[in-house]
Structure formats: C-alpha cells, structure tokens
Length: 271
Image (cartoon, rainbow, N blue to C red; front, side, top):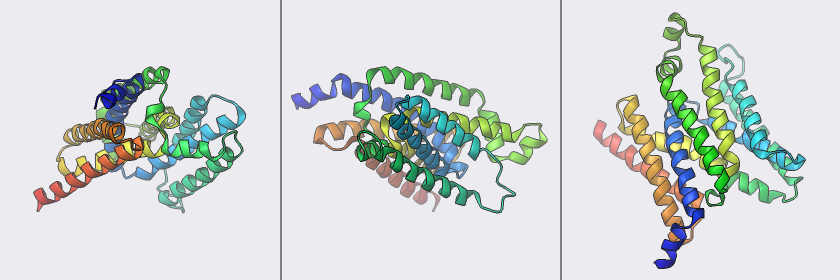
C-alpha cells in the first residue's frame, strides 16, 4: 500500500491527473455537442487526421504538435463545408477520410525510426508519459476553448440545433460551423500526440452518451458529462496504478461502465 501511495504521489502520476482533469472537462463539454449534432465520427476522423500529422512530423523531423494542429485545422475546414446538396453523403465522406488517413498514418509511421511502435503510441497513447512542460500548454488551450464556448454558447446552440432560425436572425451559419470545427480540431490536434487517438475519442463520446440519457436540459447534460469524465479519469488512473493495468484502457472501461449504468437508469426513469 505504501508503495502504491508513493507511485500515486509521484510527479508522473500527478501530471497525468492534471492533464486528465482538463481533458475530462473540455472533452465532456464538447462531447455533448458532438453527440447531439450527430458528428461522432467527425471527431474520430479529425483525431485520425491529427495522428497522420504526427506520423508525418516524426518522419520528416518536424514538430509533432505543430503538424498535428495544422492537419486537424485543415480537416476542420474540410468538415465545416456544407454537405446538404452533395451526391455523396456526409457519412460516406467521413468514412473515406478516416480510412484514408488511417492508412496514411500506418504508411508514414512504418517509414519512421520506430516503425509500428509509433502507430501504437498514436492509437493507445500513454497519459502517464505526458511531460511536465506539456501540462501547462494543454491547460491553457483547454481553458481557452472553454472560455470561447461559454462566451458564445447561445450562438453555438442556435446554429448547431436550429440553423434555419439562426439564418433568419442574421447569423452566418457556415462561419459559426467553421469556428466550432476549428476549436474541436485544434483541441484534438493539441492532445492526440500526448494521450492517443482512442482516449481522445473516448472523452468526446462516452461521457456525453450517458449524460444525455439522464439529462433533460442541455446544461444538465454538460454538467453530468463533465462529471462522468472526471470520475472515470480519477478512478481509472487509481485502478491502473494500483493493479498495474494499461491506463488508457482502464479509463475507457470506466467511462463505458458509467455510460452503461446511466443509460439503463435513464431508460428506467422514462419507462
């Protein structure tokens, strides 16, 4: 027990906890929008585009963070385009982008110094391996994204869920959609090379799914989603350290358990 407490109090575990907290708060908040707007797989596709950016940076010797953000922003600009009149459905385009950049990530990483180890890291990541200097940067970006969303929450809600009314009121819906995707893509690009695609995607989906099964209002859903993510982060970290388990997988399991329990509870309350 003493050895576990020492590990938990170590700078490595505390840095992971600090990063996990801001990921939980921002991911829980953005996740409600992502799930309600039915763009869950846009989040997955943006994460995969960012991963390809990291793989490209590692191959050519550039800065992984910069390439991840640039690739994510380019993907955000692409997904923000209107798809209502296209012959190919939005879902098909998202799938094509995800598959293309998945293959590109593997190809680029396979030519790197560490080969498939880089692919594994991009997918699974390791929040316990986050460097101390990354913690402050992730917090600054996370707080910035939250401030922007809180300041413009009425506009984002209106444009996201009632575009016709927004246009009638004079809002440029395409511009607001673009801002939303820029914030989402920028955040994903910042954190994916630190914690991996799977964990980022999990934060954007699982906490919000459970929250939306319980909540009746948007503010309730956001609060519950952030609480879900925070609980899964803290408990997942503790359990992974205590039993020497893979941290990412443990955190995702707890996110899934919470979402499952809340889904059942929500169904029972509505029956």
